[in-house]
Length: 393
Image (cartoon, rainbow, N blue to C red; front, side):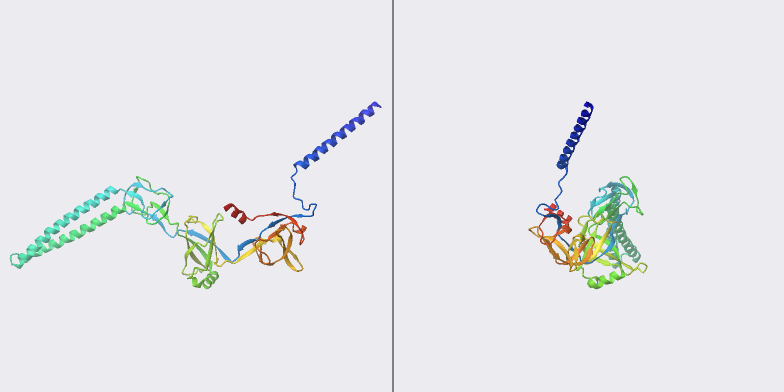
């Protein structure tokens, strides 16, 4: 009998322990589990998520692949021979037109200029002497004191002296030109690349490159369009002469969009018969340096006049026998049914032609749990555009 009582006590004790563990677990679950919004409280209010319609320009645009290229680019080449004395730029930097970039063995060419100057001075002195002799012989010949042969010789010496002066002047000019070539200057403004030679290297006036400069502002984007698109452009934009109606967007590789920076454009003079396309070259301002020669970009071409429309997620749209509608929440958090006229789809959004305002709060989640006139509790989803505007404030 005692053994049975002991067993009963052990069972009761185990049941008590299990009950206490369950109670503690239930308490901890209630404390640690995050409280989710109630889809229906005691008052019967449902919880919905809303979003404002997105306002966007939906005017039609044609998209092409464009290649960014420099309008001006220069390969610097030496015009004289000699050793490089100085390299006066930082590789990869911006240089201005007229900046001195290289100096080539300047002293030797300066000495040549001084030599040619001395030769010119000597030639001028000989010319003065020959001119005086010629005038004297000419005067004596008139008085019959000098023979014609002597006069002819004097005149010849005078003319040769004049020619010697002209030759000496030309030699001096050439020496000065060579001296100028000892300073390699930037012929355009732009970014300079790697120096192909360094100080102490010998260069000559052949095909050797010293460095390369590319202009980046303004810059050109080249793209090809079909013959059909080209004809449509000519008819739409007044034969291509008026740029005012044109709006372009450049989409960079990182997604950055440059809008309407177009300065000018021109087209090739013939259509490629193999591809039935024609090349168009558009010039853009590039003061921020975001357009880099050699890059590929997406270029969208359309009319400058905007066609703004409201777009909403397709999940917000419901349909019945009377047509399409959405559910919106007013300032008192009361659900209102709004009949809408829909247009085309754009990406993952639906264009709304009529029936909505930009400040309507459209229900995009919880739509199946509400009806017209019902009071709800509201959570709002902000678009990336709205978030960006708030961050910029």
